[in-house]
Length: 100
Length: 94
Length: 210
Image (cartoon, rainbow over all chains, first blue to last red; front, side):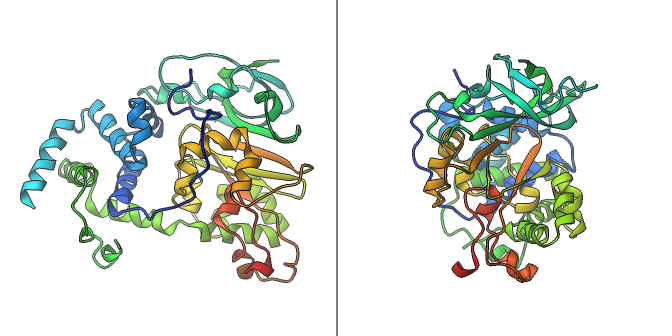
């Protein structure tokens, strides 16, 4: 039984949707933050990023957008390493919402 | 670590589902191919993904497979090929 | 459009929509990582600019040089990073770019069935379709069918080779140089080389189609 990310040869795959979108400001920053953490800062390995994405619930893996998965992975690995807890981020989101 | 295989060697991909991260797709497990080239020594991603150091480094191989062998119903010509990077511990002589 | 931030790179574009949960979370994670001293806003900005600099135009320069200079092509095939560095392009440290050559007899196409590995250090962000589940599923098992969807039909005597990037290697396809391009300058040749031809779902453009 193939894991959800192990896609080679899956049955029922349809035509390739060739439409493309410009990455948003937030998507680019997600990419940049993850890259910084993996290169300059050396607090995360690309293997850890991949593993965190692969560990998502299958429905989440298939339903989430690409950079939503990267953000999820960054948060997962940062929490594992004791650098940043999800609850802190939850609080910060509320703080930023309140601040406007 | 010295490489176990050289270009041209026939190899079989092991079958397995260890817990945790791995980079050997299910579709190629158990298949037989030939070593196309040696990429050099690399750390093991299965260990790196979980905070390990990935040591000892081992040889990474580009292995070539005949498409009809990989997919029994391959719709293209029989000489089409599939090439995949595979770590040494996933290969055995064929 | 989100181009406003080029004027002030530290300010996000004025959202023309209510912010999504994802966007709020990115802001929050960035703010906290900065507060904790792990990264700075300037580093994030520079990392974004780094990726914006990388694009198929850089890849096209490399391929065009390989077309006109056989010794360069040999060096590119032997050690892509150092050959590309000769052109003043540093592809970075995260992965190893490996060049493979398309000829009249062999056509390569590249995929990462497990995730989205791509020669970003040269070509920039991968296209959405490259990362899609359908491309990842189908191009290994029916490459000619997928290439046909991209408008490329190859005769049966051409060997199609699909490369699945499962490890540290990021494959860069050197598309075959089209006929009718003798005497063209490197810059003109670069204009024929598309991103899709460097992934292998297309061939380089022919001069007549420009």
